[in-house]
Every structure is written in structure tokens, then in C-alpha cells.
Amino acid sequence: MDVKRLAALDMYGTRGTKRRRRIVLVEYIAGVIVASGFGLWVLLNSSGTGGRVFGAWLIAVGVNYIPLAGHVMRLSAPGVLDAELVGVDVRRELARFGILQLWIVVPLAVVFFAVRGKPARTG
Image (cartoon, rainbow, N blue to C red):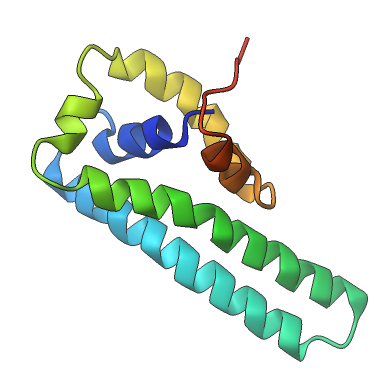
């Protein structure tokens, strides 16, 4: 999975509005803060194994948002998002990447793909 392309497509959506770009930026930054923060709170305030596992999972999901938020911040500069998507069939890619967004809920999966740095074959 190409994490940068995923972030770019999410920012652009179907019409590429500035409003959408701002919403996605806030969404990803909030994902880091809220998921990680709530996960830490759950982890520290749980006495049972299930609560601790859930807290750790939330933290890992929050960490998945870090590379996405980083890409979105870089893509927010004027002209950068449009340059990233030159020659891309956005509608076709949105359908494919919509499914790939589910990797966000897999602990540390997006981080793995971002560190790996090259797109995985999807079929």
C-alpha cells in the first residue's frame, strides 16, 4: 500500500475541495491525538486484560495515523496535492484505496507500509 497516495486520495476525494482537504487534515491529526490519548487512558485505568489489550490496540491505531498526518501536512502546501495526483484516475483509485483504508484499524499496519516505502501488489 502506498501511504502517501492513500493520504492524497483521501484529501482530494471526488472533487478536490479545500474544505475536504482541511477536514482530512483535522481528521488525521485528531486520529493521532484522540486514539492514542484515549488508548493510553484506557491502558492506565484498566485492571483487566481485555481493557489493557483494547487500550494498546487504540494506541497502535493512533500511531497508524502518524504517517498519514505527516503526508497530509506535506500535501497541504499549495500545488503539492495536485502535483501528486497528476495523471491519476482519481475515481478508479478511490474505489481501490477505499478498501485499503481498513488497514488503519490493524495495529501498526500503516506504519509498516510507510516504513517499507514501496506499494504492495494488490492483485
